[in-house]
Length: 258
Image 1 (cartoon, rainbow, N blue to C red):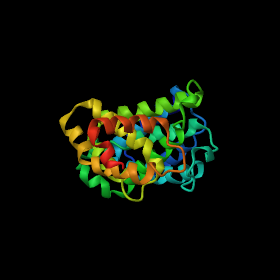
Image 2: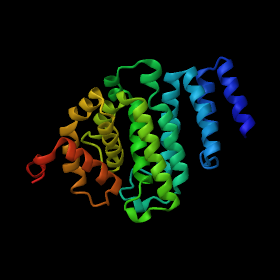
Image 3: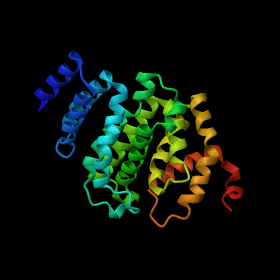
Image 4: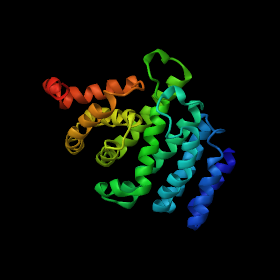
């Protein structure tokens, strides 16, 4: 499969590609999700996806969203409200999340789309929500799972998202706007925490301003969703959102959460 991936990538870069052909390639690659779970194989597939994004960026983002949506739904239905209800193994969901990490920066990095407009972009919003569901399902609910394969993949998933956000921090604002909306549930908590824990250490004024801009929305989300949640909140969310509260709330904590 290594030779096939290299030849496919070269063909994509060297020849014209119709919208239908691009979608068909992504559909074919979807069949590798449960098979190519080792690092080398995953990297080859991701290289092919990046080549596709360079050919037709807008079509690529829409195709990734439409192809992955039913796959994620079959692995981790929206009806699931508790991590223990997720039966599928972690590796395929980790692979799907890595696909989304390739697609998320494309509108800003390759199409120069204004970040604010992404909140209303149906395909991009779908990718953000899919990423939040996958990351929530991958993240261990408690630190007792440390050292297991699931824990290692969870840590890798978090770091992949961190790297994606650091490469394209302009995504932070629109992602927070989507994830803190009134319709968001507990499954948004891990990605919100991940975004906040990325924004604070960057120390870039524009990035910190985006986090500050959504401070009230994040506080409202914590109060509305997490404090009354019947499902366990991932300890990574608790840790990351603790950083947010110390940075942006501090001494006002008791006043805000009476």
